[in-house]
Length: 94
Image 1 (tube, rainbow, N blue to C red):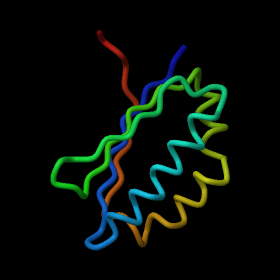
Image 2: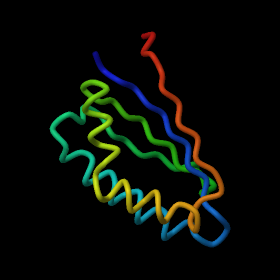
Image 3: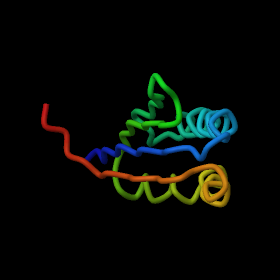
């Protein structure tokens, strides 16, 4: 069964460009994973807030994704680049 995630990432002041680069790298790498069905990144028009829409094959696949070196590197960098990260696990209704 598919796993759906929406992640909202808010950048710290003056880190928007660096954060965008890191997040776009995550998109490239995530889309290469066999179990990745969807991995889209959006940015608010006024900047500073990034929104991921993700779909994964199943929970074990998502667990494996979260162990990837580029995800672990982002987690390490996030304290200096982000003000807040909120991840919602959702159910597709329509």
